[in-house]
Image 1: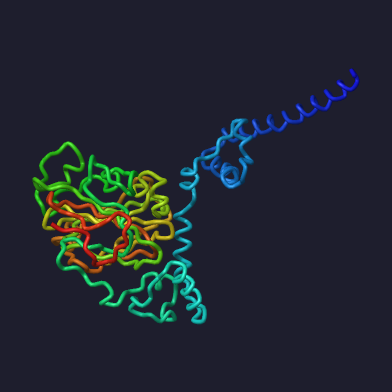
Image 2: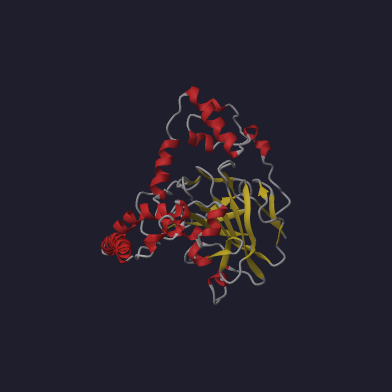
Amino acid sequence: MMCQSNTLQGPDLHTGKWLQFPQLALRRRLGQLSCMSRPALKLRSWPLTILYYLLPFGALKPLTRVGWRPMSRVALYKSVPTRLLSRAWGRLNQVELPTWLRKPVYSLYIWTFGVNMKEAAVEDLHHYRNLSEFFRRKLKPQARPVCGVHSVISPSDGKILNFGQVKNCEVEQVKGVTYSLESFLGPRVSTEELHFSQAPPGNSFQQQLVTKEGNELYHCVIYLAPGDYHCFHSPTDWTVSHRRHFPGSLMSVNPGVARWIKELFCHNERVVLTGDWKHGFFSLTAVGATNVGSIRIYFDQDLHTNSPSYSKGSYNDFSFISNNNKEGIPMRKGEHLGEFNLGSTIVLIFEAPKDFKFNLKAGQKIRFGEALGSL
């Protein structure tokens, strides 16, 4: 009996030593990782982190017991080189397709994203030489009648993610997920560049934007899906006085991702147009997204988006008053304003009297020219 007991204990001890060996080795390797530079550490952590989230049954969970910690899903997503991928996608879009290949490629896109080509000014798919031309297709004039009754119309086709009054200097990108108004718009533009008078001194950034007593600040967020019409228009009669370009990330602005990443719109590249309308402050912001690094404003030839390098948190200002020596850029309701190369997001932030009412429901589909709200 004693011999049997000793015989059984031998393999147990041997197995224990065998199990301890990889743990010690892993600890050494992880210790080496902790001494690496941040970019190198990200690079080395990527494969393990991806496998950690993808493999079933917690296959890599034992690694956490020896000191390894996976990157969070948000950190992992933020580390994806979306700007580089977007530039590559932009160049691919410019490649001219052979005539025989155009119809099958565009037909697949139309089927996938539900594009209505009957609204296009040119329905013949062979007319579009590359993907970029197809994405930026124009519509027939009668396809989007502009509402003349309401004071503010939708600047684009899309889905209403959120709308309402701005409260406590915070704006909702989707329900329950907010971002800072000041982080999104940047420091207030000097009053010399705006048509209205100096705002009364306030305790918050939000109060500084409201220029008339009794007015409130409102916002509306419109998401453009890949199958939507990609141009955007002036939502009202107003004057554009200033442009601020924020280089930044190009993460997806899909509503699912917007619920996942706080202040997503403040991280992404965006172009903020500010000015005034009959009720005071008015702004329209075009937010870039993955594969949508190219944001074009028709009257702004100096704007260049998705540059290869940029300083995090930086922005570039351009005044349409001081630089052009005129009274800003007057825009009529429904007038062409700009375009994306693929779906993205438009954010309106504007001042209006307290009796301004939105005629919307969160989540509804809307088309350019339809009413957003009125007094």
